[in-house]
Image 1 (spheres, helix red, strand yellow):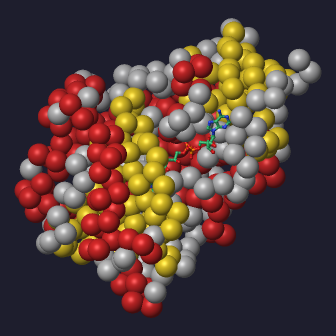
Image 2: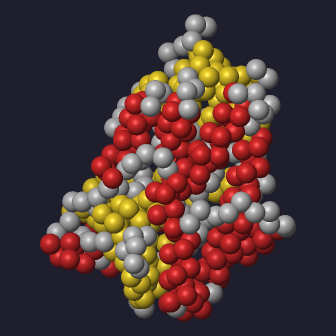
Length: 383
Ligand SMILES: Cc1cc2nc3c(=O)[nH]c(=O)nc-3n(C[C@H](O)[C@H](O)[C@H](O)COP(=O)(O)OP(=O)(O)OC[C@H]3O[C@@H](n4cnc5c(N)ncnc54)[C@H](O)[C@@H]3O)c2cc1C
C-alpha cells in the first residue's frame, strides 16, 4: 500500500467537504473521495438556514439564488399565516452548484479531492484505517471520517451512526413564470398537516421553484400523490415538474454512537437530520466543525481518540433534537391547536431564532426519555 494520508473523508456532500476544508486549511494531509462525478445533484430543497450559513466556513454567496425573509405556514391547504422577518431566514441554493463549490473550496485549501471513486469498504485498527476503493486501490489513513450520507457504507463498516430511523422526501422543479416570480420570490411556503410525519414546501430559486413533500418512510408509496396535490394547490401542472427525485432522511436516536477511536461519522451518515424541519445541512456543518476540532486534537497528540466529538455533538444537539421531537408530536397529534400557536408573533420569533441560532452546548438530563416519549406518541412509523 503506497498511499498514506492523515485523514480520509468518505463523501463530498456539505458534511464531508467542509470537514476536508477545515482540516486541510489547518495543515493536515486530507483525502476527500466521492463515488459521484462532480458536479452532481442530491435530492434536497437546497435551503441553507441562517444557522447553517453562519456555521460553515466557506463563502457561499457565488451559489445563492434567493434569500427568504417571508414564510407562509398553511394548515391542510386552508388557513394560512404569513410571517415576515427583518433578516433572511434562509438562503436558497441548488445542491448541484453548492456541493461543487464546497468541494472545490476544500481542494483549493489543499485537500486531495477525487470524484468518481467509490469506497467499497473500510477496515479500522487501533492505529488507523484502510479504505478499499472500487478498482482495487487501498489507501491508509490515520483517521477516517464517514460523510457518505443516508445510503453510504461507513455506518455499517465503522459500526457507527447505524441506529437510525428514516423519513423519506420527494421533490421536483417547475419553471419560474412571471406570476410565480411575483408570489414566490423571497418567500418559503410550508404546508403543514398534509403529509403524515412531515410537510410539503415550495422554495424559490433563480429560474425555477422547488416543490417537495416529506414524511415517514412508510409514506413513500404515496409521495407522488402528495406532490401532485401540492403542485395543484400552487397552480403547477404536475407534468411541468422536472428532475423529480426522492431520498431518505436519516433520524438518529439520541443514544446512538458517532465516534470510536480513529473513526467518526458526520451529517446524514450520523443520522443528524432535524426531526422537526427535516433539514440537515446545519447539522452537517456543525458535526464537521466539532469533528475537525477532535481530529486536530488527535493528530497533535492532545487526545487519544475521537470520542470527545461524540460528547460535544450530544451536548449541542440532544436538547435541540428532543424539542424537535416534542414539537413534531404536537403537530401530528393536535395539528389545529399547534397551528394556532404557530400563528402568534411569539412563534414567528421562536422560529426565526431557531433557524438563526446555533444551540448552546448544555447537559440536559433525561433527554433520551423525551425523544422516546415523543416517538411513542407518534406511533409505529416513528419507532
Ligand atoms: C428531498 C430532500 C430535501 C431536503 N431539503 C433540505 C433543505 O432544504 N435544507 C437542508 O438543510 N437540508 C435538506 N435536506 C437534508 C440534506 O439534503 C442532507 O441533510 C444533507 O445532504 C446531508 O449532507 P451530507 O454531507 O451528510 O451527505 P450527502 O449530501 O448525502 O453527501 C454524501 C456524499 O457521499 C457520497 N457517497 C455515498 N456513498 C459513497 C461511497 N461508498 N464512496 C464514496 N462516496 C460516497 C455521495 O455521492 C454524496 O456525494 C433535504 C433532504 C431531502 C431528501
